[in-house]
Amino acid sequence: MQQNTPRGMRLHIGLFGKRNVGKSNILNALTKQNISIVSDIAGTTTDPVEKAMELLPLGPVLFVDTAGIDDVGKLGQMRIEKTEKMFDRTDLALIVCDNNGWGEFERTLAKEFQKRKIPTIAVLNKSDLGECPYETIEEIKKFNLEYVITSAQTSVGIDNLRQKLIDLAPDEFINPPAIAADLVPSGKMAILVVPIDLEAPKGRLILPQVQTIRDLLDNDSMVLVVKERELKEALDNLKKPPHLVITDSQAFLKVSADVPKEIKLTSFSILFARFKGELNEFVKGATAIENLKPKDKVLICESCTHHAIGDDIGRVKIPRWLTQYAGGKLDFTHYSGHDFPQDIKDYKLIVHCGACMTNRREILSRIMKAKQNNVPITNYGLAIAYALGIFDRALEPFPLAKEIYEENKRAQK
Image (tube, rainbow, N blue to C red; front, side):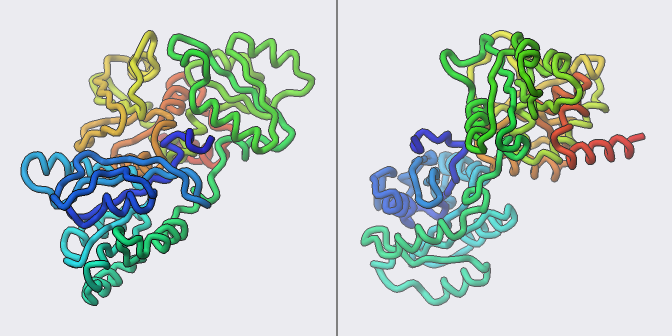
């Protein structure tokens, strides 16, 4: 069912603006449901309110109603900080204002979204209370923004706003990119290696595995799913070799030993490095592992907030492999969910998970922050492949990424 689409796969539409301009009313009008509490009292919305729904022809979207950006006091500042965190997750922004016009707060929002290259619509709400001032529209035009005049109370302009959302949605939501289907032609086979360990969810596969299977099946590719212990026997039993083997990164070393060199090999995490982030940037970031020294600070980020058990990949295995590679103890810091440190300049490396539980915009925002602070960033699969000495092989399915890696290697000599 589309309603079960993970939040990380949904188009994130954020509603921003001052207090009491009708953001919550706009959300309720768009969704045709009373999602957000509305009141004449400014500051009714505190934490961001999220509503997952279908918006055809876009499909699954996530509307997020945020607290007023002009909130006051200590509590108000906390609300503003939560609203600003939503900038990193927003794929499409609505700046809502009313008949009081377009002022410094709205200009600041517009500049921030333009800097981040986030498509933005100005929503001139409360038209039932009077005509929108000419000066407001002229001010909005200076920013080259699309705008819609609405009344959430009477539904005037709401259909036009829905159409604008569809018109300005980023192309990847109209034509979503492949996870692995572009690597495995129709009629060819991919073997997916799926370890079943303590952290595997009971009775089901983890999200990246499920999404990869569906992506390949939609392409009419064949899929064979095995555990790492059965991989060698599965390969021996096939009449033709598979076109590609995709493994959980934790089993990289064993799988690499079992898969003949002529068969291409990569990991789910590396596939998601390009699906949810930017593969080439993550490849460059992974080469920083070469220069890690004992006591260097390393930031490890996970999108989900699962309870770590046993030999956890982010808190135990990756730190162990990187420590071994560096030849001494490193200083690891862990962040999870949507939390991300404001000050990252002292880190020598950021290692991010595959990001199956968040959207691409948030990962691109983190990559941007890393670049601004000259901090290399990579992801779990690439870091593991580099630390275990199988980086070249893991990049075999991605010629451009491999070329970038080899250029980096030559430059470092």
